[in-house]
Length: 419
Image (cartoon, rainbow, N blue to C red; front, side, top):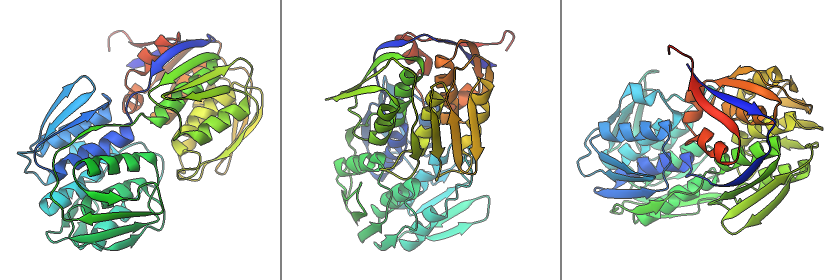
């Protein structure tokens, strides 16, 4: 069994680059299916979720090649319409291939998507979007079948701003005749990044990041070259690592403009933060104080970042609260924080955190961001920690331990003898 061996209590220092955003790369890779030919995707992180997306593309008949952090995706010979169940079950973002296939082939089939077990995450809004565009959708409970050779533009209002449903609707609408208007879409920066790639392909799409997205579909698209934005949650992870362990970190490739609620919370807790063109500098030289946050859809505090902040606050000196409004199982990391000496009490959908010194221990990552939170806590704890469940973190972090080592952290990936 692989695990991270972490010796905490050492301040971090140094400069590291933030890799590309997983949540941008995945819908962009699905979008390559909308045009025939070779697209070039730069700054695409080498993650297990990205690898799953590439395997899906390969199964559909595409040719893929990685050159460092650049991916070449040639869809010229793509012909498949079904995403294999084994790949579909590995990650939730696999559902995005339905919208892209529906636009390209007029047909799409898949099993149910997997991903972190964060609570109820239905895809009914995705399927409703396809139906609004004129597709016939059959859901047997195990298999989803979509048929829509003559998709038509429509006006669709989302009851809640779903990121995945917004992206799937954008992809499918590119293959529809006429104008599609998406009201109350999700506004996350990664959706604007998808829009940027679609525009580079020649699509007429505008409004991402606002209350209305307009897609004028039915236009011939071409392969494109595009650079994926920096990962804001990875950025938050490294910021919270320094906030936990102390010291000063410089993070390049982003200016934090998409991460303002996190930066504001860390500043309120006592960190010194400076934003400059292309980089963020954070310094922490005293115990963190109290903050009170509530998660929500962008531009509110991101749910993916709340475990990271909680881990840093757990080793601080204040009384803080975090209220979660997105996922009902987001707090599964709390047991691990308390095993490292934290004092975190759950009351409904709110975590009450009493900061105090942490100590090393043996814990298991419950999911992607919960695992990163345990690493953050271990970096600020006295003594040695062992963190298992690394497959979760490999889905969203490229070389997490390598990056933290560059900042001076004592962390290494190892495995039990005989495994």
